[in-house]
Length: 378
Image 1 (cartoon, rainbow, N blue to C red):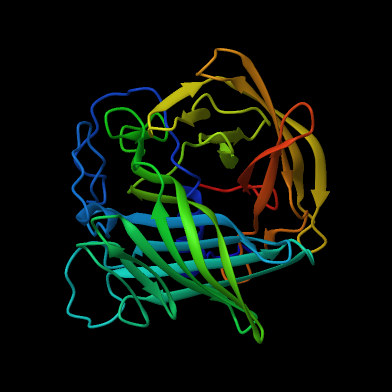
Image 2 (tube, rainbow, N blue to C red):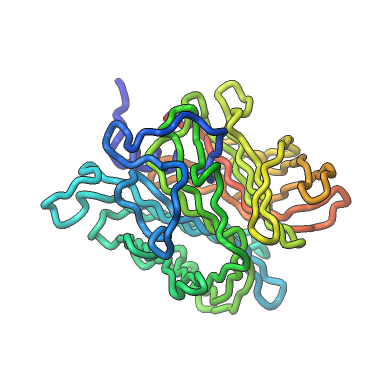
């Protein structure tokens, strides 16, 4: 008997398929203004206006605000955290509806926290319709899902307030302040996602934010400080056919630079030519460089049976010197799998350290691995 896909699973599958971290490609033909179902398509030469473009874009089918980071507290305590907010156009599309609740947008959110000292990893998902405990402003950054929220508190300084947590086990209230200018990944404002002229996104990133605030664990509250990374992507299309998953990593080096890499995996195990690595220098300028990805170790999930890369060596070129660089991405805990209990899409998203060839820790990273428990069917 054929298994029918529920509307909820379809929404979560599409959201996950679109959220891999801005898949850039070389320039393609001029895109149409809309997709076949009437949603907007990113256009070359777009000029962003803030704070408006930090907010929601109802004419696009899907967008997400994605924050990951590393926090430190007294007593050698270290934590990794993830906070993700998705907006997906509902069955009513982008048309007006007389229904007061839930006709236009559906909101998904993920939260996760790693306590490095204990190795404990906890996570939670929420799904709500517009008007039912979830919303996103169209004029500024102000998204919420239940008691979780991400809001622009000071437009002049681009300062952001994040409230999140995991059930009754943990809660965090963080102030995120950019340490360098906003980055726009892609060519001429557009990040290409495949050969289809509609397959693209606007991809906005704060690659280094100062994070300060409080983390509550049970009855204890800790003052924490660290650094975070934030993506905001706006899209109406899917990834290319034949891709079964992706490997995505954001790296924050101690020399003040960052790099972002995505490796799109094809069914036969090779990487799609759309895969790319971008460096971000101290001023926020980006430079694309070739890369090689080598899996050094693997971890098998006792929950899903998926075998994930657990330690990875990255080879690329340092754009500042032209010299070859080798970086090792090493998880702070092997089990950082979000098992997809709500949507049925397990993936691995975890805090990592970055080492050089001499084994010295030279930065922090967040690694996302999808399509290992099951191939993504686009």
